Length: 118
Length: 112
Image (cartoon, helix red, strand yellow):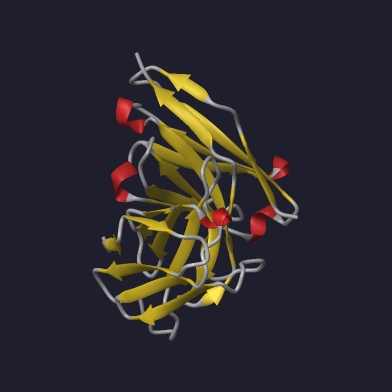
């Protein structure tokens, strides 16, 4: 079955960068886009962008342009989301989520809590 | 960006009673391909969101038939025919007709 296993919680200082991983299993990694969505504490869901694991092509929400980089390593079926110049309001749970057919966000990872604090 | 709004933002329901959540979009979600790209998710406490409904009214695999979705254009509704204790959580609508994908603010459902 499809599984998306994300890396563990991170604590970062303002101005630093964080790189969250999402290891996929149970399907052909290059066959489906991977999206990243975040959720600040007690808040709603915010889409960050997607990566095409086959080509490496990306599409980022304008809000994150210049600060986010989504990459992948097809040899280990893993997608990455790196967010730079972290601020306190980047404190959130970051989810990877795989598309399915016409459903852009179908299967979700368990989430990775990133805390930005001095 | 397409703005998604939901009403109510919170709902307290007696088990066995129906519940209804409204979702409105700032632009039509009807694509030229004939599909309407509106989805519903439930985020149970402490869990990742899970897909309930896709393209307005299609229940995802394993979703109980007490959940139903309806609507068109810019107005959509999620209905739970008989709420059960396991239905508590936050319900989100989402659109994907246009990037960026956007979500509604969420409707918190709890049990009376």
